[in-house]
Every structure is written in structure tokens, then in C-alpha cells.
Length: 115
Image 1: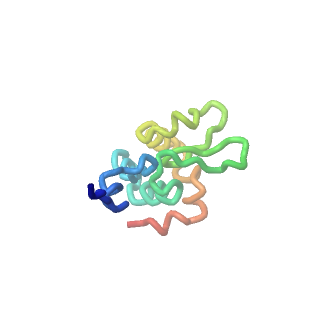
Image 2 (image 1 turned 60 degrees about the horizontal axis):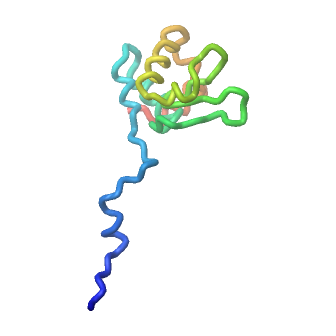
């Protein structure tokens, strides 16, 4: 009886990797702020990864799309991994402080992502 062989390409072509997260920085378009700067800041901070966790060597990590620091009185990292919640919270920070809370804005690394 002949043995059927299947290439690895055939096996994996319909499998979606579970760790791939779509770029959700387009959520910045929902708010009344400079959309190009907000989008570029989001991309510089998280590359669009809703599960991004930064500043891991500090007492308070930064989480989610806009890398919001989990300071006392702020949402938890798990809450900030919700992209809609993260962007809403980021917009409230922006309304109070402009783009100053984001290191990508202050160090100008957001400029790489300006469209």
C-alpha cells in the first residue's frame, strides 16, 4: 500500500499562529487628537501589539498598545491589554497632558511611523 506524503507547507498553510496579533493602532482614528501623531506614537510604543509589556525592569510595567504605565491608581496590565480600553485611557491621558506621557513622543522615535 503506497504511503501518502504531505509537505510541511501543505500541513501549515491553513493554520493561523495563535500568537500573531493584528496591528490595532488604527484605533487612534476614533478620537479627537492629532491622528497621525497618535498612530505613530502607538506604533513606536508597541508596534501594534495589544499584548506588549514594556519597562519590565521597573517597578511599574507599561502595557498594551499605547504602553500605559501601571502606576498606583491606574488600571492593571491585564485591563490595559484590552485595545479599546487602552486607547480610551490613552486618550484621557492625552487630554490631560498632551503626548508628554509617551517616551516615543519625547524621544521622537514616533517620527519613524508618521504617515
